[in-house]
Length: 374
Ligand code: 5AD
Ligand code: SF4
View (tube, helix red, strand yellow):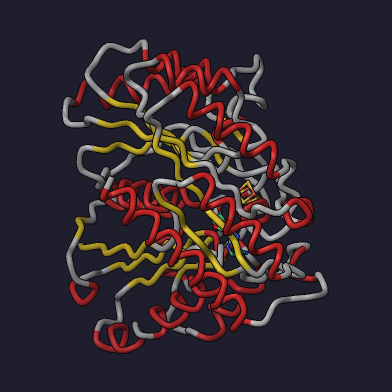
């Protein structure tokens, strides 16, 4: 019995697929390299932008011929995209050969649904769920081990679908995280531990008693062993001094921060509900540069947010120039159904978004070239 997993989206999803692989291996499946050889194909989907969803529809559609050849092939679609009722229904209706569609809160019961397929197609979307503390993982990222510390997001940036598909922030118990990392170190093959969460800086606020993210970092660094520690993603509004100090003072922590700015313009930042200003963001950057001289800094930007003017885009452009990031991701704003920004007037035409994203990426290329020369 063989499995093949197709993963879309962020590192958290890559790690989630390691969990899916763990579940499947516990059921007796082994991995294979080609979908043609698989007895079960699992799509772990992403909903962050429309393009990601379009690709899933295209690639799932292509499986029709495989299902024709192998009637027993099980096709499952999971992840952020299927947490949306309408999209899940559309998948079921468009592709009668899809057997299982599950939202984000019932992944741990995949085994149950695979068994249930004998009785018919399975669709289940739950509104909320507890964080999975311990599940079998089949790790696939070489010397790096991903460790999930929290799930969900409470920020409701107005463009973002994540809070709707991943629910509210839930942190794992610190003792369980430390235990998992101890076991990883004991295995001896991991040189790097990367902590994952949508918003790692608010780790532990929902625990009783509360644990701060900086405390978690220090406690992990106290563990014996030869490893580097990294984490993502940080939100500028929550990146506290004690976290910057932890990065600066702990030898084990990689001198690297991914700190998405999204925009360099205050009016747009406010419309995005990011809860910081351009000035505040630059203050944090200056603080990082002062306390951690060789810190690599990267960022995400969205261009063409509703009502963004050319001048406001220029503010983003100037911010990128001023900060001189080690690298950036630039995205064209993609309206996500159900979010506040998708209902805003003044949506920006695609060709303007294209122009702006290309201009930003050209700047990034130019700056990188100069830095490399230096
Ligand atoms: N459109 C475009 N980009 C988006 N991101 C999140 N939501 C959207 C959207 N609706 C980007 C942000 C985030 C990254 C993971 O994806 O920049 O930091
Ligand atoms: Fe989305 Fe904002 Fe949460 Fe990041 S912080 S996942 S952009 S809502």
